[in-house]
Amino acid sequence: MPPLDEFGLIRVWTEGRQSDSFLTAAGVTVGIGDDAAVVSASAGMEWVLAVDTMVEEIHFKPETMDDADIGFKALAANVSDIAAMGGMPKHALVSVSVPARWDAKRMERLYEGLYACADKYGIAIIGGDTTSAPQHLVVAVTVVGCVESGRAIRRSGAKPGQIVFLTGPTGLSAGGLHGMLGQPGKAGKRVAPSPPKRLIDAHRRPQPSVKAGRILLEGGLATSLNDVSDGLASEAWEIAEASGVKLALRETDLPISGELAGYAGLCGIAALDWVLYGGEDYVLLGTADPGAEVALREKFREASLPLFIIGSVEEGPPGVELALASGKSKPLLKRGYNHFAKG
Ligand SMILES: Nc1ncnc2c1ncn2[C@@H]1O[C@H](COP(=O)(O)OP(=O)(O)O)[C@@H](O)[C@H]1O
Ligand SMILES: Cc1ncc(C[n+]2csc(CCOP(=O)(O)OP(=O)(O)O)c2C)c(N)n1
Ligand SMILES: [Mg+2]
Ligand SMILES: [Mg+2]
Ligand SMILES: [Mg+2]
Picture 1 (cartoon, rainbow, N blue to C red):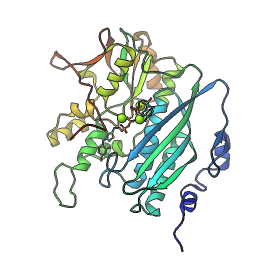
Picture 2: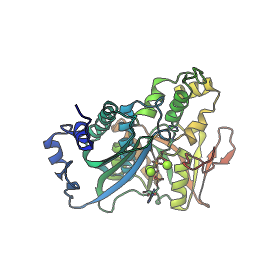
Picture 3: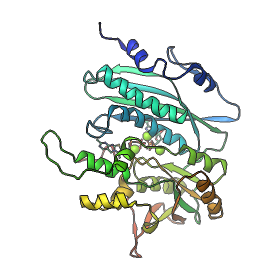
Picture 4: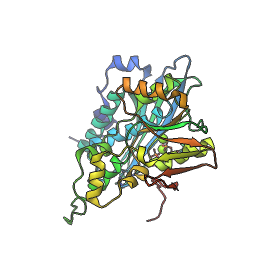
């Protein structure tokens, strides 16, 4: 059989993965197969649009991610950006640039992961683009979501006197990554103990907080919101700068699971470093009026979702501070994942 061309490949990856009735219900008038997709707009809603890219060697390596995980996470990272606006993800466009090393079977696995995430969040895959690539795989996903007009939750609404909350623990993904990168490679040298499964799962299959974002929006409970992709400290800085305030976080209120602390101890690393600077957590960091705290706790408890109050908003030049368990405070650097950092 001759090798498939890109059109054949696209068919193999996507055909029959989502039912016609699902696509119709998702407002898809023209889906995969034409020059562009057409979807219907809902009255009273605005579009929420985000794109994120995953690049082999930068966002994943063979030892950190299975092929299906790459597809899942490429979409999940985008879903998280929609969640961070309080929006509902609806449609996705998927662009892949595929080197020869990545055969058809591997790409099928990647698409299985992609559709697993799409189905989990009720997202219709409506198109994309396919090219060859010289060496490394690149996956760029654009997600289209919607939100009630004028209601999107921005980074800029934090005000002094408000509380700072987090919708899940951070640091697990970075811990998992550390362990997986430290596993025996070709040279067979083992440099890190095996990480617990929960940490590996957090890295490979992040679960973006769409429900949490919707609860916050529907209840008018958040004054600012951001998702944690580059690290808690870095995202806190983004809220601080966008809002013109200082975020004062409390070390003793940061969620650090025993599992993470235990594994960090085994590695001789301070868990707090992963918690503050690790990234790829895809939980939501936000602020709320102190008067909303009771409702906030109640709504999250009803939905069986975690919620941690980790600090407060203060006046001052934009910045982030951490009150340490010792009673002292230290400024947190605007450090996080930086694609252009040297070294
Ligand atoms: N190449 C680009 N051209 C235009 N806008 C960009 C580009 N890269 C990022 N942005 C925009 O800059 C902002 C910050 O991007 P980013 O740090 O990637 O956000 P996030 O961490 O939420 O994914 C977003 O509004 C994003 O859309
Ligand atoms: C092999 C490997 N090395 C390092 C990382 C860590 N890492 C790569 S990108 C990134 C930050 C998040 O990705 P980015 O593209 O910056 O997403 P965005 O901020 O745009 O959402 C992190 C923590 C990784 N996931 N895999
Ligand atoms: Mg981005
Ligand atoms: Mg974001
Ligand atoms: Mg980033």
